[in-house]
Every structure is written in structure tokens, then in C-alpha cells.
Image (tube, rainbow, N blue to C red; front, top):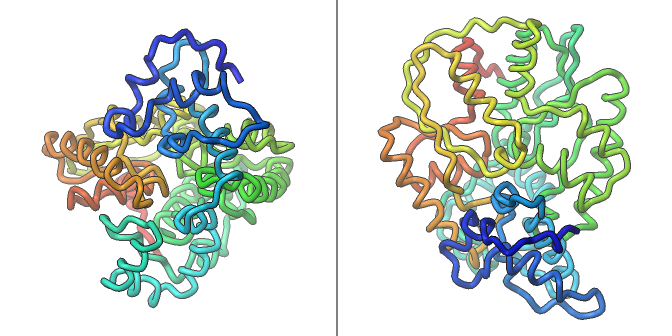
Length: 394
């Protein structure tokens, strides 16, 4: 832990979106390296304000000395969670994988209940915010709807994540059909939640359990010559960094070395002249919101580079603002004001572009921005597939 390398420059504080709007949060410098100098494993955690950190990672991107304030705070959050009772909201979101499995199985009833006044009141009593609509569960998951596959030279193990599997399997089906159109063999390996919701809600043991299962499953495919491709930027950050970092999962390095963002992977194949996509004209004006975790992956903006190849498409990149939702962070009642203020800032800039719709790699970003703006929000692959003429066929 390199907290001693902090040179007291406050650049991380200047880049922290939560610090700008939440006076209860002292910022990543004080909550991270400054406080770490005085923390002791023998003493009970008293700094509740560490829970105000949304883990957007912008502080780490800004640090000139390689200090990782977000990682320091994340470890402090885990210790605090072990020593203090979890709220109902923290417990539910930590177990989001099981909650989503149940929601998908009972999708018609679960979706109807979540939209009712009594449902919202119950959620609010549990400490869950209801200022934007909840995503609707899909009765038919991605895993349950895709069984066929082609056998080609390039082989991809698709790590689709909870959001696509339980809420938007239509996006997952388009991704599979797009890759198959490039003559790529796509398989859906046995997989569980990446573990980030559990990690972000103070349950490191559960996060490690999910991570261990995923590593064991994905390792078999990597050994068989498959590349791992993910589409959720938060899942990707967890796979590439948290499995090797705070979770300390054996075998994580091999997975990180063979995992790619979907759009990064397609660009790689284009650069290596393995594929030549024929993009058709798409006359749209879009505002592309860059998720915080895409920035943290440090792979550039591959979806933006792909969309630049689409004739007729105008896409303005907005990478200065956090949407405020940050997975389950903004869905907690205690963080509602912070999430609304950050989301409001992002929406204000989006509307100034005059764009007709929003595009963002992250499902939670799309939920937040669409809910607050009233605009349509698309995954980049939806626009790319539109250009390629690829449709969702259930």
C-alpha cells in the first residue's frame, strides 16, 4: 500500500466528483492515504465517511505518484463492513446476483411490484432510493436463450455480466451475432457475478467466492485457446484489477492477460486485418458519456473509435462527469442527494450538445442518465449493430 508516496498535492481531491457535492466526504486524500497513516487493525473502524466513496477511481487516474486512494479506501470499507452491522440495502445489493436470479424467475410479478407505490415505499423503508425507475428483469436470460454456436478459428468466451444476463439479454444476443458474423466461435462459459457488487457493499468473502468460481471456469477456456471478452466496463475492471488486487485470487493474472473489452477486441481484429466490417450509414446525433470505469481501464475509448467508422453518425464525447449512480451506490437512500447532483450535472452537459440520444458502455450509467434526462440511452454495440444490419432474433 503506497500511501506513504502521497505528496500532499490534492490533485485527487480536485478530480473527485463526490467531494464536489457531498460535504460529509473529506475526499480521497484524507479518506485514503492521510487516514491510512493512523489506522490500526487492532482498533475498530470509526471513519464511517469511507462509505461515501463511490469507487469511481478518478482519484487514482489523477494521482501523479501512483498512489491508489480508491484501493486504500476500499480496504477501509471492507474493514468497516466487518465491524459494523450492514444495512438492508447493503445486504441486498451485495447479494445482487441471487436477487437478480429470483427477479428474473418471477419477472412479470417482480417488475410490476417494483413499479407500484407500495413497492417503492417498501424499498424506501429498506434504504433503497427510487428516484429513477428500476431496470426491468428479463424472464428469459441470455444464458437461457443462447445455445447454438459456430466453430471457427477465433474463439471467444463471452463474460456477459449480470446486467446483460438478467435485464438486457437482447444486447447480449446482438453481441453474439455480431461476433459470429465475423466468423468467431462464441461460447458462454459457466459464470457468476463478477463480485463487484459484493465488494462494493462490504462483503469481501462473497466477492472472493464469486471470483474464485469465475477464475476456475474461465481458466479452462483460456487453456483451450479462447479469448475472454467482456462488455461491462465495471466487470472488466474487476476481472483485470480487483481479482489480482484486493481479492488476491490465484490464477487471476492469466485471466487478466487474456481478457478484452468487446470494442477493444473488435478494433484489434480490424487492425490485424482478420475482419473487415462493412458499416452502413446511421444518421444519428449522439452524446457519448464515458463511464468512470472505462477511464480506469486505461484502454482509451474503443467504442468511440469504432463508431467513428460509421458513416453519418455524429458522436460527441463527454468524459468529464460521473453519472452518480456507480452501480448500487446511487440506489442507496443515503447517497441519493449525491447521485442526483452528479447525475444532474452530467445530464445538463448532455442536453447542451443537442444530441437526440445518449450512448454509454455502462448499464448503470444508461439507467441514471436516461432516468434523469428522459432521453433514450443506448449501449454502443446497439449502434454498431444497427450499422452492420444485425438485429436481435429471440
